[in-house]
Image (cartoon, rainbow, N blue to C red):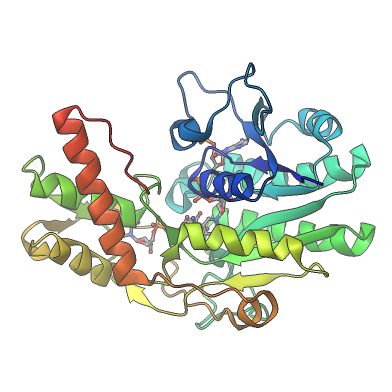
Amino acid sequence: MTKTALITGVTGQDGSYLAELLLSKGYTVHGLVRRSSSFNTERIDHIYQGPQEVDRRFVLHHADLNDGVALVNLLRDIVPDEVYNLGAQSHVRVSFDAPLYTGDVTGLGALRLLEAIRASGVRTRIYQASSSEMFGSAPPPQNELTPFHPRSPYGAAKVYAYWATVNYREAYDMFAVNGILFNHESPRRGETFVTRKITRAVARIKAGLQDRLYLGNLEAVRDWGYAPEYVEAMWRMLQHDEPSDYVVATGVPATVRQFVETAFAHAGLDWSAYVRYDPKYERPSEVDALLGDASKARETLGWRPTVLVEELARIMVDADVRQLEGQLTGATVRVDR
Ligand code: NDP
Ligand code: GDR
């Protein structure tokens, strides 16, 4: 029997990789797309199937995590075996500018989806995209037992969603799991997250289109992994016999400065000639150090990362250089393979 999955946030970095993974496993994949005044499906255009397509296995629906009734209707129509809640206002810095909106979409949105599952009576498994940002100022290394201390409206909203997920598991016997994922990146990463901001700038500086890169805190430590490997961990969590919560991380720390050095060096550039500080990119309260201990995912799910931070930086620089060359020559380049 082929399985059916519903992905919220399918147009995002992780949603696009997860859709590819599930399609490759024979799933029928339904994606929730929010209405936008211009196309916002760039990351999934290569797998798009139009309504006229025969044996269609990838179907998009307009809805929004703010709209609980639409979620109930969608679940009743699709009757998915698995739901992946990846939709969120996912930018930490932006969450300080739009705290209520972030709380609504990222926090309450998860509860709306859980409640929609309960209200619709559909028996399905659900994955909640929890985040290492929930640990905030808790000292590293962090694992499933580390107490949360979020440092942003985004982190606080994710803590709310985390506990809502645990509560629906306990109260309604729902197969509901939290993947506590540490930062993961790729050539499809949004352009305002620090890794992609850096690798895009490296490509543009190398091409002579830019001569400065303004950044905030270079001393923050993050545990950066490769997004295609992290969506595999999400899927494994929902295939396990028992629902549980898992940290997913590489266990390798690096500062923003080290990522900058690696990315510029890969393009043969000295970073210090180009990078400048702008306090605009600081947060009102920062998360200084995230470093994950993913022993449980390794032992229970057999999940292991293979791409570590330096290779990740090189993959992203190479992809941005190719993409820019394509733009400059007018060639069609798929950047993220
Ligand atoms: P992205 O920001 O790339 O994608 C977020 C997705 O959510 C997009 O598809 C976006 O749609 C959608 N979305 C935003 N608002 C709404 C809404 N109101 N209703 C429905 N959908 C909405 O995030 P990532 O792919 O990087 O991350 C996926 C999930 O994992 C997020 O929940 C994120 O918070 C979480 N996470 C991410 C980590 C990372 O390092 N990448 C680490 C830990 C957790 P649109 O394209 O229209 O904007
Ligand atoms: P983060 O990712 O906040 O960890 O959240 P981001 O790439 O935005 O920041 C990482 C670190 O870099 C520092 N930094 C800058 N950040 C940005 N965006 N822009 C800058 O110019 C800059 N300069 C320095 C930040 O201060 C921070 O310390 C990501 C998101 O994907 C969340 O959704 C996810 O939950 C967490 O990762 C895990």
